[in-house]
Length: 326
Image (cartoon, rainbow, N blue to C red):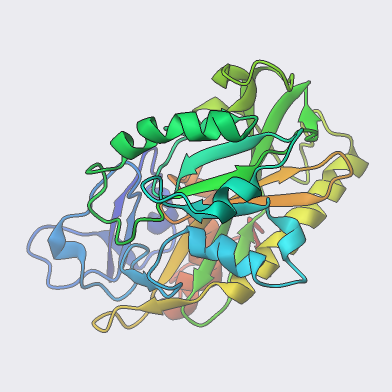
C-alpha cells in the first residue's frame, strides 16, 4: 500500500480509495508517497518536506524564483513580448529617468508590488505627476512587509489594458491551471475560471476597485468544452486556443527542478490571462501558490496523468480527460 497526505478544501478521499492501493497517512508511518497541500490556505509542517512526490517541494529556476521573472522571459523574447503588457520594474526610493519616460500621455498605468497577491496595494495612475505623488505611499508599504525581497526593484509600472474583452459587460481574466513535472511534461486543466470585476466596465473612475479589479474571490463561472458560459462556441474556442498557446509558451520557458532530497516532483501554476477585443491573449502573471479551486477534478487528472504511471492502480480507473497535454 502507498501512503498519501492531502490537505485541501473539499477533498474527496474516493480519488485514492477507488484505486485500491492507497491509504491515508497515519502518524508513525515511515514514509509518505504522495503529498498534496494547498499552500494558499495551509502551511505544510516541516515533516512533510522530504517526500518523493510533492507539489510544494520544488525549486523554480527562474533567476531566484521571483514570479515576475516569468513575465521577463516573455518580454525578452521578440516572438512572445506581444503577449504581456509593457512594464518596467522600479525602486520607489530611487526613481531613474527611464521610469518617468516610460509614462506616456493618454495612457493608463498600474502600479503594483512584485511580491503582492490578491490585488493588494495596486494603484492606477494617468500621468507622471500622479505616479510621483504615489511614491511616498509605496515606500511605506513594502519597507519591512516582505522579508523575502532581496532587491529594491520590488514594484512594477505596467501599461493598463484600456479596451479589454468583456464578459457580461464586466472586465475579467481567465485563471488557467498548468501542471509542470520535473520531466518537462506539461498539462493544462481543461476547465477555466472566469474571474470578474464586480461592476460593469468603464475606463473612468479609476479609483473604483469594483470596476477595475478582478480577483480570485470574485469567481463566477467555470467554462469548458461542455459549458461555454456566456460565450458562444466560436468565442469559447478562440479563448481556449489562446489559453493553450500561452500555456505552451509558459512550459517552454519555465524550468522546475526538485530539491536534492526529492526524487520526483511537479507543481501547479495558476496562469492569469486577459484578452483584447480581438481575442489576443495578454499574459498577466503566473502564480506559484495559486490556491487551486475545484480540486477534485484537477487532482483526479493529475493522478491519471502523472501519479498512476509511477504507482499503477490496483483497480481499473475510468479516464476523465480533465487535463490537456501540452
